[in-house]
Length: 182
Image 1 (cartoon, one colour):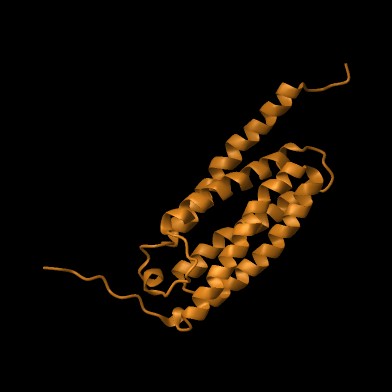
Image 2: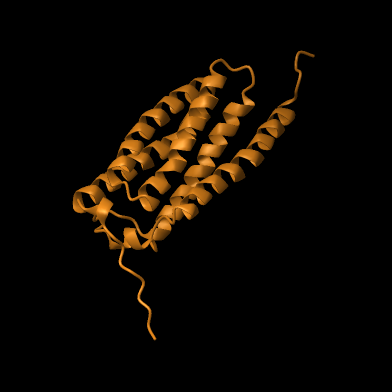
């Protein structure tokens, strides 16, 4: 008997990691967006001219939920890959990119930093690409699970750039006051 754990036990260990990472990462993403008052319904954002390719509001919630689940599953795969070479660096880089990701919503929606949020997205693309490379070396599926995220970040960068181009005064734009009817 050369095995320490059966295949079933190994799958169970991965599932335990996933049961922690998926709700935690989805919750952190939700919390970041909620605290920043992100998306449609934000008076500042609603006042901006949007690019032609801007998806409807519901699409962002669906896309980010799927992306956060895929990110969490990829992270669980790497966490479960004990003794894998480069695992510590991969975990550290994943956490860096996650913090950068969570910082984008407040930077854009709360502090109205269109240029700063674009710079953050471009830096995030580089960090996520490096994370994919490290995850790929540990487990290919972990790297593959992050590819849709990288594509979405490229699209988000385009949208962020276009919002800045269409609204050069965006950072100083004052959102219209709420109207009250008596």
